[in-house]
Amino acid sequence: MIPVENALTVESNIELMETNLGFDAEGMVFIGDILQNRLYSNKVLAAIREPSTNALDAMVVAGKADQPFLVTLPNALAPQFRVRDYGSGLTDAEMRTLYANYGASDKRKSNDVLGQMGIGKFAPLSYTKSNFLVVSYKGGEARTYSISCKSNKISPMSVDVTTEPDGLEVIVEVRENDIQTFITECATFFQFFKVRPTFKGAEIKFNEVKPLFSDANGLWVIPGVNDEYARSPLAVMGGVPYKIDAEAINWEGKQPELKTLLESGIIMRFNIGDIELIVIFK
Image (cartoon, rainbow, N blue to C red; front, side):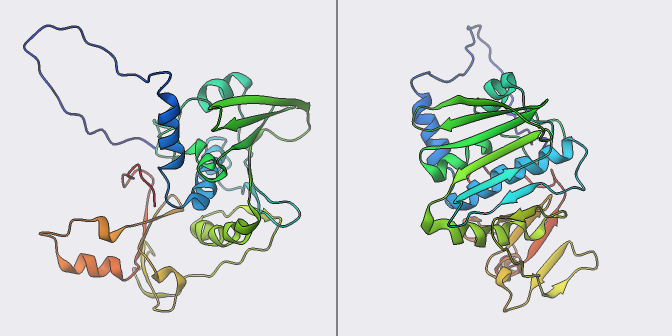
């Protein structure tokens, strides 16, 4: 997604040497802690949303937007949450640069994709507190990597010959007590996808929104009073739902009807790039 530029022009009347901003090597441990552990309030949802959004982007870039990617839901016998796309996959060099670096992203030149910050790929670390796995299928090879928050490193684990199609798979170990939570969050998160993923591992049920009011094109919907989506307002961009925190808005000087509208649990659909997302997700 093309980022919104909010640049401040500063003029100086003195000649001084400029210094590029950067990251202190030792400070990366603390920066990683902030990005991994303090960015997401709903850590289960973060572990679902960010890999799935990246998978959606990979399918779009590969010209497969009309095809589903694969989501494997956790169960008692196989307590892993997996997201497998069928995009182009990543080479070993790309894993060590594009994937390994905070902020590295190749998605800032197009509104066909949702990604832009280069941070969400590490979101599973906010849930696991240890590591998660990434398998890159590329050119007949399956390369497995461990992404660790303890060592703050990406470590190659294995290289295997495969007949699997190219793409990327993210694997997150799920704690036993969180298995049903993952399934429930998936049922809400994937509700609005134009092309929902293929699911396996567990049964998932979607509750279709029953609108109380809606515009003719379905770009905004006020759910019925008893609908589960009436709990909080949503901005749905590119099929991905984001909760709107009405309490965080400064309503001074604004029409009170707008607050009432948000409190109704309105669901508003936007094209990618129509709205700017804040860094801290709810």
